[in-house]
Image (cartoon, rainbow, N blue to C red; front, top):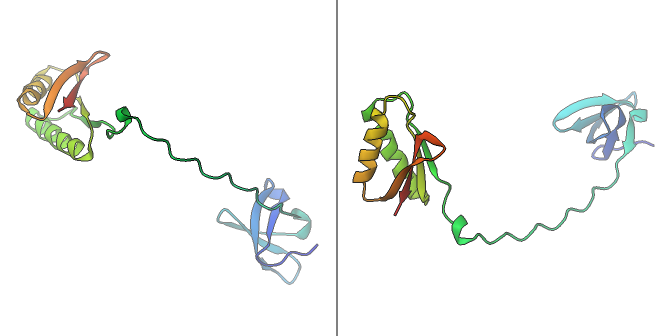
Length: 148
C-alpha cells in the first residue's frame, strides 16, 4: 500500500512512533519525520496510522480561594555576603516581592556567627511594610518576613 507525501504513518522499526511522510525516493523508500528526526524507511517498516484520538474539552479553570490569590513568596539567599551587601539584596527582594503581590519573603541568612541574622532582624524591624518576622521553626538559618 503506497503512501503519499503528507500522509501520517507509524514506523514499526522505530518503536511504533507516528511520523509524517516528507519525501519518496525513486527506489520506493519513504523519508519520515518523527519529532524533528528524519529517517528513510522501506514500505514494510511502515503501517497506516490510526486517526488521532479526540482531545477532551479543556477543563474549566478553577476559582482560586482567597488564600491562593497572593503571589508565591519571595526568597533571597544571603550566604557568603557581607552585612552591607546582604541588607541591600534583602531590601531589593522585598521590593520585588511586594510589586509581585507576595504576602511574605523567605530570607536565608544561614546560622554562622549571627551577624547577618542580627542585621537582617534590625532592618526588618525598621521597615514599615513588614508586619512581622520570625525565625523558621525548622531552620534557624531562615527568617520569614510577613508584609502588611
